[in-house]
Image (cartoon, rainbow, N blue to C red; front, side, top):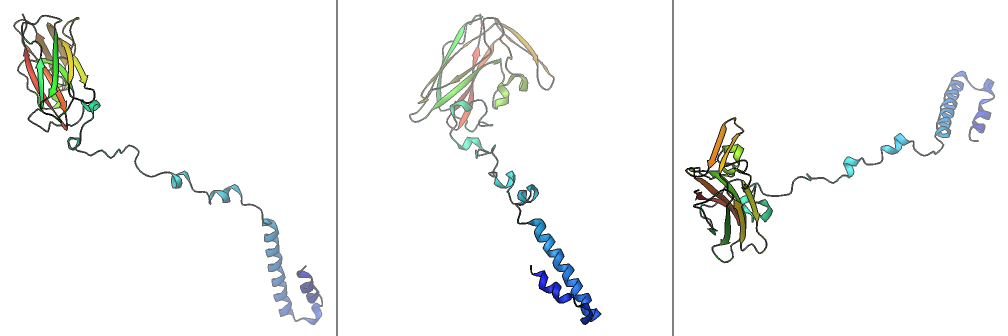
Length: 234
């Protein structure tokens, strides 16, 4: 070993001055400590705690970005709307002129359970109709925003059917190439009472002497609009 020559040189202590002996002793102690540390580590593999410091965490390796962000613009009216988005997009009507032609089969002399058919087509080539929603609403009510036709928001339309043979809401989605849409709703005679989200009690009655409205929310390219048709009963 490398220490033997050094120890041999230290043995004849009588020939070495005390000061030199102390220095040599310190050197020997330092060397022994260094050898002990080397043997203790022995080139062994790092412990689990050492290895974890070299492995990137899941945060380091995960993909960045918000998975809920689809990149859709805030103003949905700037895009062509998909047929299945007729309930929520856009938030506000963006066109006063509705580029659709609507035909309603019958609106007067109605009885409980009568069917009213609606046929919708684009007014011009190249235009589309994505679908529409039908509501039975109070006579004289006006409609400009989506909330207007949601019963518990404004109390303008019935929340439940007026009779066992009638309906209160119909949703129609057009099929490609979106050149027409057809739907049927059964009108009823009776009253519907409910409470709005603001706590207001609302009663809507349809029948003889109590006209109502058939309100359509029409969905077309880049926008939607409303059209209302008076319903009278006999």
